Amino acid sequence: MDRVTLEDVYAEQFDFVWRCLRSLGVPAGALDDAAQDVFVIVHRRLQDFRGDASLPTWLFGIARNVASNHRRRAARKQAPLVDLAEELPSVGPGPAEYVQDQEAAAFVNRFMDGLNEDKRGLFFLALLEGMAIPEVAAALALPVNTAYTRVRRLRLEFQQALARRETAA
Image 1 (tube, rainbow, N blue to C red):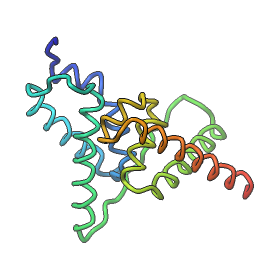
Image 2 (cartoon, helix red, strand yellow):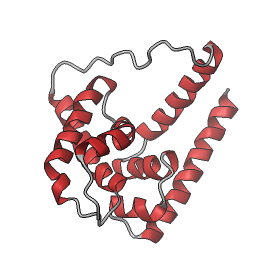
Image 3 (tube, rainbow, N blue to C red):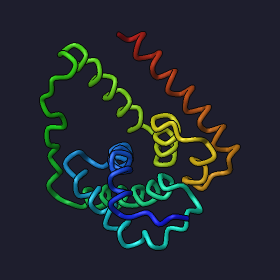
């Protein structure tokens, strides 16, 4: 197997790691620190990466542990973290599209907030990231058939939540 460098991993996988951390409940104000923690661990352990699992699967495991530590640390702090502005002004879509995107993202985040950590990881990897179920199963240490069944149930739960949202609107 060709050796990958930290620079390659960072350049190719930073966005994935960021999305992992965000979906695993790291507050926006702590994302920079959490991402840095992930890549410090990657730097220390990259030489041990044998490629038994895919790189995203390996990174998800690291991000999952880092997110758990950050959430635990934030819960112990007396002063809550204050979220920084998440979006910078851009020349992208107009205000209506922006509001729709924000409402959709908020809905997905609320849905994910209601999931336990295992379901949250499954939802993120399989449904948001589109990772193959066998790879998701490996990342979450689940039997493949169990992962397929749980993803099917999560899809149904999400569709039902979406239907309730549309009925209420």
